[in-house]
Image (cartoon, rainbow, N blue to C red; front, top):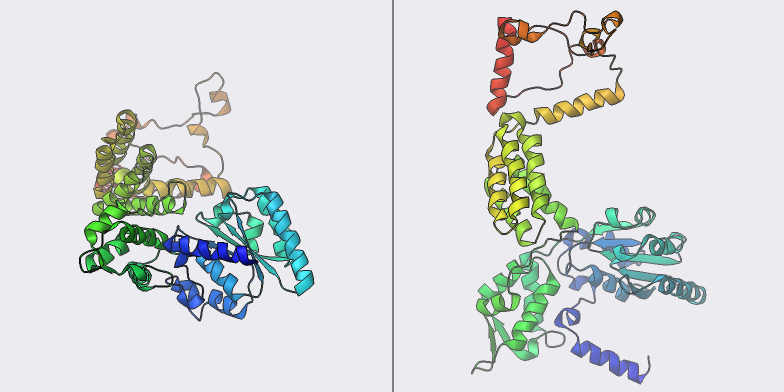
Length: 440
């Protein structure tokens, strides 16, 4: 690095955003992610021992994926190269690999190639990294906000350790903010800011576990709040509310959180918690989720988890799906809420769901025999000559419109697929079947 590069780097450091200046340089400075960075954990030990293999960090924005990669850069003896999948092409990969080979030949040290947003690399670009990660020419560290098992080449996955980073807790966010306000070297210490407990709580709650978002907000607050007569910048909850605008929802319609929230929504309906149902519904609506997608999930739940315990659940859900399609948002939120609450409050039975899956399993794996002759179609000339339909007992010709008769193939006689429950209307169905058999 010559004099001009040195001056440029120093200027960049001073002028860079607070989130960049406050980025930890040592492992001990990293806040949060204790589940992978405690001293007894594999990743911590591997970094300290400088014995890394290829890694993939995945998690929401602002949780420390790039931070941990740069901590590794400061800790390891390996050369560290950064590629960003949004701007780097295959030629950049080829050049980085060539330099890694030359560096290893000259120094004996490996090269770590850090690929930010690795899920944005196409298959050919990911394949270009594979042989060099495999033969040890490079150590690949990928960072992604998407589930790598869906978005990253399976071959790369099989050769890498996967570490999931979680949204930071409120206490971790508050600790980061306090340090940023205190630090004169990298933070906002020279501005002499004070912050109220309420404002600190507000940031911890509304940053959605994203440290970058929290630091950006506190920097904006410090830069735009007038200094008081006492010479201090006072940051309160009102200032922070203005700077943050509204709570950042940890939800991405195309990402992992999309599946997590819809999963919690469905499980809350299944678990009959109407309030949790409305909470997760609100998350999806606020994040701009497709209302037709939500309506389809409600309809599936109405059949899978309510079933014949309350047949009206399916009627309500399917009509809600039609109404939302025709009316649209924002009024559609009311229709979705009505249908979701109905399904949540309805009695539950998965008898039909379990029954069809059990029947499908037998069809796929067992000797299921043939349809009994007396149940086969007899509406054509010559059917009786083939024995079709003979001895079939027509239920409407018997009391209660029921007659004892075997309907399953001989190989499956006695098999029970649908175990009716005592829940809701299904109990009445169970009792009605029992009465018919008794009155025969």
